[in-house]
Length: 332
Image (tube, rainbow, N blue to C red; front, top):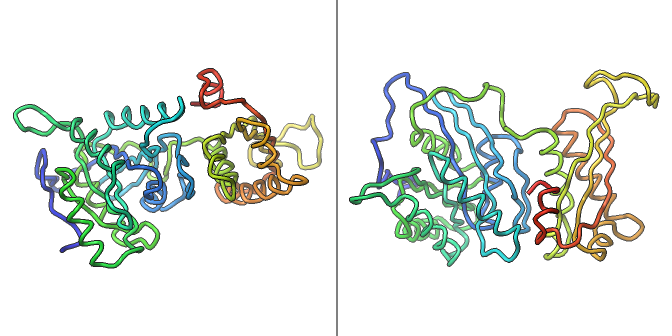
């Protein structure tokens, strides 16, 4: 079996006339922990989405931007589709469905190291209904199957999985990749680009995300807080950046400091749902919170390209995942 499949269904032949530029948006979808955020970062070439082995790591549709000579791709890394148990879970699933109505291509991630399961079939059914037109004609976005994590299995197993995937849905393309090793990431980029409509460049050449610095900093803190916590805690964690301020390096509170010339102070709150969870995040004598701060600060400094002081507080917002008002205050 070859590494890529030719389109099995298409609105046109996917080719552009000489000199024509393509642009549009692609949603990366799949159940939790299939490699969506890792793939998004690999396609962009920079870290724009946090990654973790914990479920529900991604909670927002984060846009990464890939600029090529003849195309520009807006990547939307969506939360993992799952059977919701809370109001937050329902809203995350709604966010995915809303996103799918606004994109030109859907990249459906199906990991090679796992059999196709009920969660995959649930998403496939949603996609089939969304693209089912009248008189047998397709409508809506084109759909590309992305077989992820191919570095974890043998070549024979990849081939078997490709056959299983091809029976799941009428895909426009099927591409096996490894975001960790970079295998066929360039091929996937080209496949996505050719499935986009003809259109102008939408973003400047050097822009790689629509996320604000505050949004990325909040996600980096949450990523650091997810490390080493119990399975039930990731669902309960939320982070709000309260302030990012330039302060006088000599400590004068009344001095005016130009952007980039002072000492950057980031103040953020980590929210959990119960007092017992607060104790876990803080740790004995504050040891775990110090580790979280150290990990987060390194990533924040790498992102911002400058040193900063990080001030973290842990707060309890009781059962916030089930409270619409508290979810609104936390940005959901």
